[in-house]
Image (cartoon, rainbow, N blue to C red; front, top):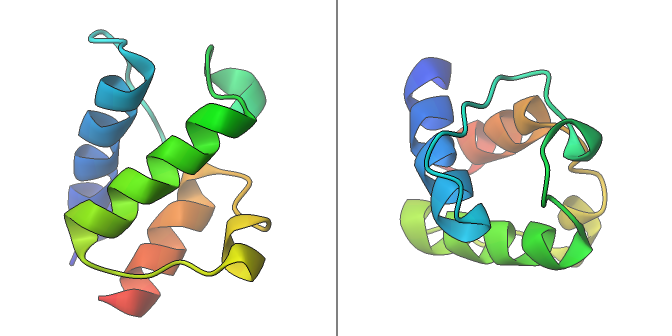
Amino acid sequence: MEKEQIIKELEQIFKSVLEEDDLTISENMETSDIQGWDSLAHINIIEEIEKHFNIHISVGEIVVLKTVGDMVKLIQSKI
């Protein structure tokens, strides 16, 4: 799957979890760039990513996900 398509799908997940319909994400964004992306939201986002892409993300992988780009790379490696 292409990076742009993954980002587009991730954006929908972020919008849903954070309840922010106008949210636009980019590859370089990190937690401090997106209002509401705290530790609890991070876990909820990971859970939705696992469901949406039908993948499993380990605890060790979760703790190193700092940016949207990190998420894209991890998803690409698993699908």
